[in-house]
Each structure stands twice: as structure tokens, then as C-alpha cells.
Length: 117
Image (cartoon, rainbow, N blue to C red; front, side, top):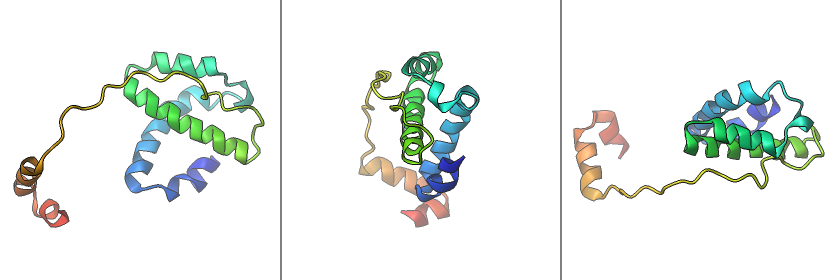
């Protein structure tokens, strides 16, 4: 897959890992479908079937980028089927670690963690 070969290596390591995880969820569902046959309804069904609702949003965002690149590379002329598909509602986190928490984590951590901060 050209996206994995050409785009993924240019992303940060953590993003590469997250994208690889997302692709492992997406590929069994969408790999066998012809690119021009995938519809917004297929994307919505995927979203609704995923029990991990926030992860589904991330996976659809990645799939959208894959479709945009596929258009750019000439694999399809169709509009991105992810466009306009509603995302699952997300609740923002309500806890932010302050300096005391970060210091406690650092002090309890191994030497490598302490050296990294």
C-alpha cells in the first residue's frame, strides 16, 4: 500500500504506531472493497459498528487522509466518502496534570524516565 510506504514513515513515531493500529482495524473491513465502491454509508456503518467510539473517529480521520492521498495519486476521481460523515461525540478530558503530579511521576520513575525529563 503506497500510503504505508510513502506517507507513514514521514510521521512521528507515536503517530506511526497509532496509524498502524488504526489500519489494523480498517483493513479487514475496507481492503477488499474497490476504492470507487466505498460510500459514506459504508463509513457510517463502520463508525456505528465500532464499540470504541473515540477510536472510530481517529480511524475514520486516517481513512479520510488515505482517500485524499489516493485521489492525489490518481487511484480515484471520486469525492472522499468520509467527507460529511458525522463523527461520534467526544467528551474532553477534565484532568490536567499539574507540576506536582509530573514531579511525582518523574521521581517514582526509572532512571531513563528521569533522564528524559
